[in-house]
Length: 196
Length: 196
Image 1: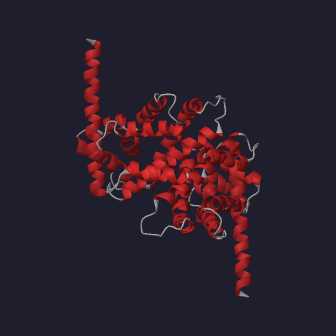
Image 2 (image 1 turned 90 degrees about the vertical axis):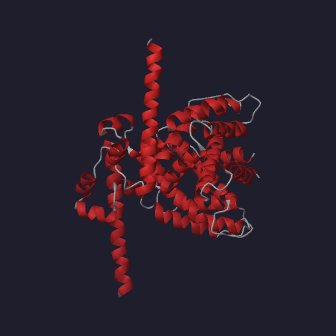
Image 3 (image 1 turned 45 degrees about the vertical axis):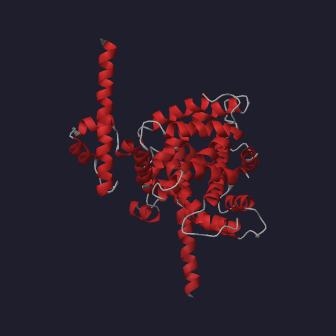
C-alpha cells in the first residue's frame, strides 16, 4: 500500500500548490505584484501563513519556484537528443520540451508577464537561469566533442549563453505583444541575425 | 567664481566616494560581502551613516553604483563608431572603452569577483545590464539600417543580447581564473564559436 498512499499524498500536495499559485496570480493581477503580501495570499487561499511558507519560501518562489524542476527537465531533454543533432538544435529542442511541460500557454504568458515587468522578479529569474546554464556545460561540451575539464570551455559556455539570451529576448517580446506573436518565429529570427 | 567652486566641490565629492569604495572593498575582502554592514563601512571610512547613505543607497550600490554612468559611456562610445563599422565591432569597441574608464584593471577584477560570487549582487548587476541593453537598441537599429519603431527589432535585440552574454561569460571566466587570462581573447573565442 505504501506507493499508493505516497502517490495520493503527492497528488494532494500538487493540488494545494496549484491552488496557491492560482490564488497568488489572481491577486497579483488585481493588486500588482509588489503590493500583494504573503499574508494576503495565505488568507485568500485558505491556508495558514505557516503552511504557505512551508510550500514557498517567498513571493518570488511562487512565480519562479518551479524553475528548478524545469531546469532539470531542460538538461535531460538536451542530453536525450541524438548525437548527430547540433548543440544549437539540441538546446532549442530542450526549450520546446519545457515550454509544453505542465502549464497551459495562457499560464506561461501570465507568469512571463509578471517576470518581465517586475525588476526583482526578473533578477531572481535570471539567477535561476544561470544555474541552468551551468548545468548544461558538460552536456554541450560532449556534444561539441570538447574534452571536459574542471573549467568550463569558453565555446560551450558561449553557445549556451547565446541560446539563453535569445530565448529570453524572444519571451520578452512575446510578453510585450501580449502573447500575440509566435515566440519560436521570433527566436529563429534572432538566432539567424546572430549566426549571420 | 561659481564654476571653480563647483569643480572643487565635485572633486572633493569624488575623493570621498573613492575613499568609501576603497574602504568597503577592503572590508568585503576581510569579512565577506554579506557579513559587512553599512554601519561598519561608515565607521571605518570616518563618515556618518547618514552621509554614507547620501552617497550610496545600499551596499549593492557601492559595488554596482557607477554602472549607470558606465552604461551611458557605453552607449555613447558605440554610437560614436564610424558608420561603416559593423554592430558587432561597434559593441566590442564600446566595451573596450568602458573597460579602461576610471578604474585600474586590479579594481575591475576586485569588483567583478564580488559580483560573480554573490547572488544578490549578481542579480542587481544583471538588472542594470538589462537597462544598458535597452538603451542600445535604437543605436544598433540605426547601424543595422533598420527603421526604428516603438517596438524593439528582434534582430537588433538579439545582437545586443549575444554580445552582452559573451562579455559576461568572458568576465566570469576571467574572474574564475583570478585575472590570469586575457578577457578579450576569451571574448573573441566565444564570439567565434557563436558566429561559426
